[in-house]
Length: 636
Picture: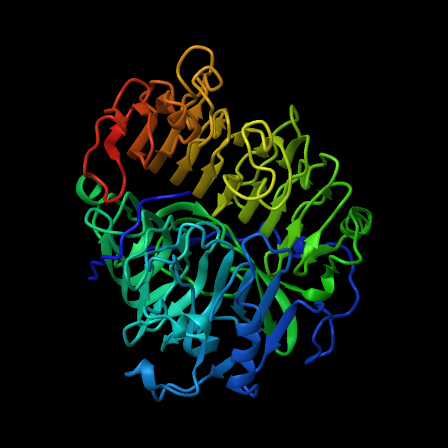
């Protein structure tokens, strides 16, 4: 997306753990003996594993070599640190003169993680930072800083500029002592991280960003998002089950659930919504080393949680030896080889790369784990789905990207249509950090990106994106009707991002659905109103709850417009409402924002016929850099 930029800057419990129905269920069939202690599995050439004896210069050299991938690169990278301390803390009070630190920018399609049981098992003295893009005129933004992640490690922040950035007149990488920057937009999560200082989510000189998710983490001092009412800032962020010293900043949609130290709700003035607990969640699985043996820890589902919980005890989840996983390679594996391994009882590790498959990955066994490394990407051909999950409970899919080919019906399907909806509250199926893309990297089209037919599914940190730039982008090219279609009951979406689809972005048919944090941009490119109408009203609501639904709950929603072609044609389009939902005592929406980012047109109402209009012809100053914005505390 695009937004007006400027260079000014304003700085400033009770935990219930629900175990698996049986931990042994995740073991699958009898597997070969675990690898001998100290033996590293063959994760392929795109995975780098460091130990504390590795010289800092060698670590920095490797990280620098992968830091400059272009936005639509086909290269993928995963970097892991074994337990221990890396770099020197001697210069922590003066980053400009510090020596011996691990200090790098983290680029596209790179995941960096620790291999300990706790984030504190891996301590980085230095900074693994993400910086805004700087234009030729010196202005900055992070609106396309996507696809990178940190997990399961601690950082003692000592940051300074690196590489070409250090040679600029205004380096982006300058940072205050004890502060690390992570100035990113979607698909760049921070999970199980411990920042031993401040965390800066925006740029040194001010940078707009459409942020991501911070989960199961600790920030000892202040999280800085800047004040979006007066200058460039993070427009939105979702923080879940974490502990922070404080938060400095306001925005369009800042949502906190189960966060110790979170600011109080201040939605009307600052766009902040704070919930005491997270209703239900299932944290993402992660690779770890236990007594020299590589394992994947799969957390259990949790309800009404708050604060950061890093336990890997038996009541917090289950450890699965890597020997029980099929380790797939993008250069040699096919849909057939992967599906044969899954059918034999294996779990699946997708090593970094792009998997150009001629059919979907089929998950038919309960409790199967599918874990990607380094933004592993499924790119099926011939209109095939990327992954289908049968009518079984307890499947966990995490950390994968998906690129559509042309003519796809559904890219990711959870449960079969019309079947008895399978679901288990104790052992729910969960999809975390699943990033679906139609267009951008390649030509593609789809009817639906993600379809959930099973009950009690948890979606966490998913971004479903009809690309607005890149390859194969156009109103009649990368066509997509809907991002998320929910037919199952008791489905929960945490940190849901759905953008630019051509009809409703979300269609929710199932009962008792819950959403905590929703971000959406309507499609930029309807050529005219006639081309974009649901048949009875202007445009399409971004978030639609079916008329027959009796119970639904959603909190913290932000829906934007940036209608370009119709504006250039002199007839900017409108949407009748941002949200469409039945009027019922048990259908609740809280903290809703609509906004015209730029260009013409707008949204007539926030939800149904309620809430004020946002229109380019009636600008206001609710949000800095946006033409107009409106807020509605509750509805319908």
